Length: 508
Image (cartoon, rainbow, N blue to C red; front, side, top):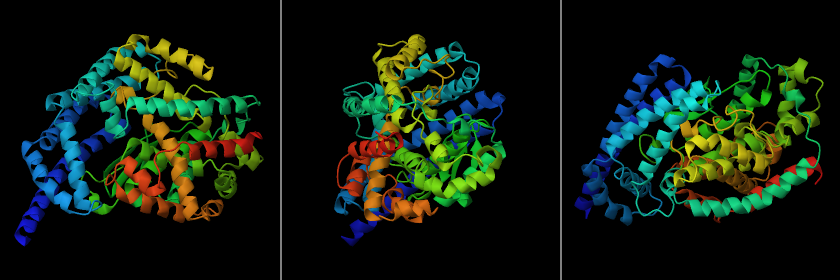
C-alpha cells in the first residue's frame, strides 16, 4: 500500500511539473498580450501575432500530449481515493477537464486563431476611433468562421454556442441562459420604466474637467484601501480596461481616462481591481497550476461588479470618500452636495455604451449582445448586417439609436479580440452573483455596511478571500455558489438589491 501510494505521489509530482511548464508558456504569452494592449508600437502587430501564435501552439502541444493524458488517467483512481475537496483531487479533475477540452481542438487551428485574433484586435484599435466598421468587417467574418470551427470540435452540443459558453462559464448552456435572461428581463423592464418616468438625475457635476493625474492618484488611493496589493500589481492605461496576471506575485490592471468624465476612470479602476483582488487572493500553492485563477467568467465578474457597484456606488462608501474627493477636486466638487453626487453616479437612463451603463439598464446591453452572437453563430444574422441589427435592437430595447458604429457594434473589444459566442453572459451572471455574495457576507458579518461608511474594507475583503478567492478553480461555479450560499443561482437577491437601492433613490 505504501509503495503504491509513493508511486502515486511521484506521478503527482510529474503532473505538476508538466502543468507548470504549460502555465509558464501561457503566462509568457500573457506578458506579450499585456504589452500589445498597453505599450507596443503599431508596427509590432504582425510579429507579435506570430510570437503569440508560436507560444500558444507550444502550450497546446504540451497540454494535448498523449503522455499527459495517460498520466491523468493513471491518477484518476488516486483522486477518487482522496476526500472530494482535497487539493490534489481537484487538480486532477481540472487537469482532465482541460485536457479533454483541448485535445478536441487541433494545434494548428489554435495557432491560426491566435494569429488572427491579434491581427483583428489591432485592426479594431484603428477602426473604432475612425468609425470604420468596413475596415474590420472581413476580419470579423473570419472570426465568426473560426468560432464555428472551434465549436464544431465539440460535437453533440444542443446549440452551437454551447461549447463557447461552456469555456467561460462551465456547465451553462444557451437554453439555460435564455430562460434566466427572460426572467431577469421581466423584472428589469418594469423597474426601468418606473425609474425613467421621472426626470433623469443631473450628472453634470461628473462632466467637468478632472485632470488625468489627479483622477489616477485618487483611484489608486481607493483601491489600495479596498485591498489591491501594489507590491504584486500595477495599473496602466489601455483602450479597453482589463486585468491580467502572470503569477501570484504579478496581477496587473489597466484603466482609461476621460478628463471630462470622472466616472470613466474611477469606476473602471475599481472594477478591474475587483478582478485583480480575486486573482491576488488565490491560494499561492495553486500558482503554476490550472487551479490558479477564477473559476468562471460569471464568478470573476461578480467580484468586479461587487466592488464597483455594490460597494463603490453605495451611499455608505461616499459618506467616507466624498470629502476626500472634494479635497482632490475642490473647484469642481467643493459646492456639490453628497446627495447630488450620489444621485449622479447612480443615474438611470437608457444609453448607448455598455461600459457606461447604469446598474439597472446594464443587463439589457448584455442581453442584446448575447442574442446577436447567437444569431451570428446560427447563421440568421450575417456580419455585414451587424450594424443595422445592433441599432434596431437598441431602438427596440432601450429606445436609443447609436449615431455611428463607434458607439454601436464597434464599442466592445470582445468579438474583435476573441471569439463570437460565450463572450458576454458572464457580465450578467456576475451582476446576479455580486448581490448574492454580498448578501451572505453581511449575513455573517452584519457590521460590513457600517465599516464601509468608515472607509474600512478588511472584513469584506477577508470574507471574500476566505469563501471565494482562495479556492481558485478548485470548485466549479455551481459548486462554489452552493458552498457559499447554500443554494443554486438565484436572481432574487439581485432584484431585491436593485429595488431597495433605486426605490429609495427614486421614491418608488
